[in-house]
Amino acid sequence: MKHCFTVFILAFVFISPCFTQVHIGGWSFHLPYGNTIAVADAGEEVYCANSSSIFIFHKPDNSYERLSTVTGMADIGIKNIIYSEEQNTLVISYTNSNVDFIIDDVIVNFPFIKTGNVSGDKNIYDAAFFEDTIILACGFGLVLFDTKKRESPATYFFTNADGSTIRVNSVTVLDSYIYAATLNGVYRGSLANPLEDFGYWEFLSDSVTLPEGEAKQIREFNNEVYALIMDTIYLYNGTGWNIYYYEPGWHTVDLNSVNEHLLITQQFGTSLPADSSQILIIDTANVLWIIESTSGLPYPNQSTIDDNGLVWIADGYRGLTSTDGTNYYYHTPNGPGSTNTFDLDTDKGRVWVAARSINSAWH
Image 1 (cartoon, rainbow, N blue to C red):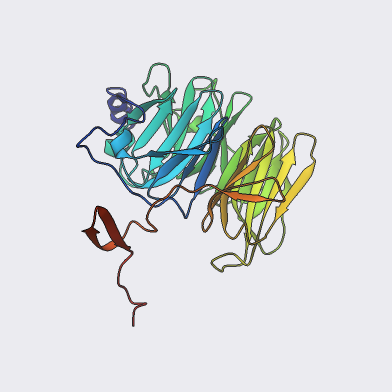
Image 2 (image 1 turned 90 degrees about the horizontal axis):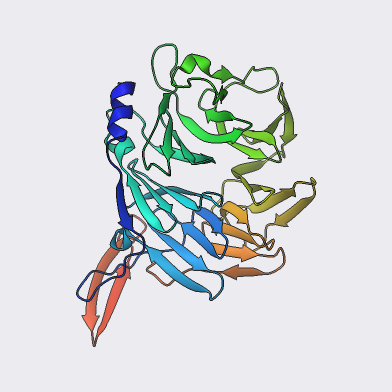
């Protein structure tokens, strides 16, 4: 099955111009842009996504660019976005296992994880970048994509002893090793080995220095590897693991390594919005900067930092937010409050929309 899938995904890649303009008589789109879940800084641009839409905020002129199937995206239902400055590439993973790559402003669709002959979980949970290769963390293992050749050279299936596949939640690369955070724990594989053979993968969760069980995220920062297990962050020193950070009661919702900073996004409690929230930002000199909970940071889901030290946050209530640690700025394009529409009507050249729907909360 692995061989057939690998050959199949080598067959085709669909390429389309990025950000196609709507022509006269064509369709336009109106989507909600709040309740954001993911954010990625790309220099003069910031990409932000919620579960139904993606938009670009242009820093120089404070303008917005909305992306959808009308502008060239292959699908709907966003699961995650991941950006690489070195490759100038944005990965868009969809909830139905489809994938778009925006490479140098060209959309490259890669539908073959979605359509491939693999049973079970085919979600794409994360991505890492190595030279000209994108490594996709999937519900069954890892899929590699060559951005120059626009094809997949390999698929690495992660399997238990009974033959069932192992979900890979997150992936990173350091010193020619791929590190994979999985439902079982953390695995490491040398790129010098034929990693299609799962026997070449080393299991690093030894239950002594790193607990066995699900590893949620893994990141390379400052030439070291950090793994998130439950709500504890562990640091790998090359031979073993040490606890790097844990604070009782705080739930770590995202671990991000970008622009020579490690960002730890946290929420406290189970309320909506969170009882409290904070973002811990560590630089390569191990200097800590904490952005603490205020009304401007009610429910952060992910954070990043740009070259000017401005922190960008995907917040579940405020939408795309930026802060210097003191002031908060909100950047959300105009749009409906929800993808649910109860009714609409026209009057005097205007369209009136009743968003959301009647449900059990109505009396």
